[in-house]
Image (cartoon, rainbow, N blue to C red; front, side, top):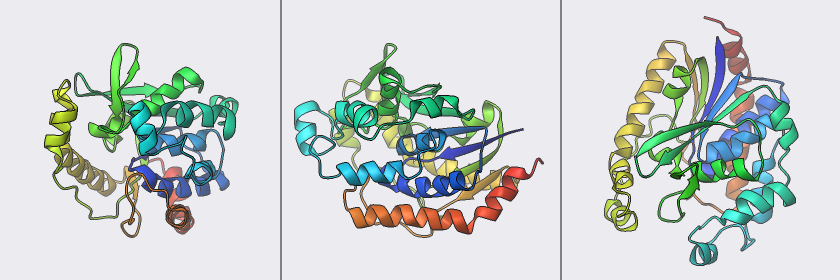
Length: 284
């Protein structure tokens, strides 16, 4: 029985997930694999590289750096989050990602992106981290409108959350039977229809599949939440939610808010530590 960890995205809400997995890491809690999407991948990779607090650290360190993110970057490059600085310079030179530890750790690491020409998910297992594979991290977290498509292996890719916000089903399909799922919205949250469908159509007129994905995204997301509830009832999933909504945008640069989200995750991880250990040790 493979035991896994599934991380939702949600921009800086993902610091909640990082707080939990940092506690797990400190307590020596291991899983066989992780499936992550968007910000879940950006923060979750630090679990496999054994770098506690790294996601919080670099976001605070570079939050006011015009090379990192902002409308200046968007006007210059078409990317609100600067592609070269955020996904290459920073992890390879400034807050160095521990690629050797990532590769040596036996946990499998999977991410999902969206093929914007087909409207289908593209799942990828990442075994090592270098300049080329960092583009997969950029792809899974590149939001429509404020990002240019990431071209990899002949595909044009954007945020995986467009088609698979909480990729639990796929993880189960590839053999992960018992999973902890960390959400970044509180229990009971329901996504509403997107009010920017016309804007998405204008920006992605070459890629109509994206407009269709966004039109149906709330239905897909809410159905995934229902599926998670069903899996919890069957004892196959331990779902972890924040206790309250986070008063932030997807791209948040307010340091006290970032620290509060991360701290809430740590507190949640500590409070649920026994439950997490019991769930993972159970084999039925």
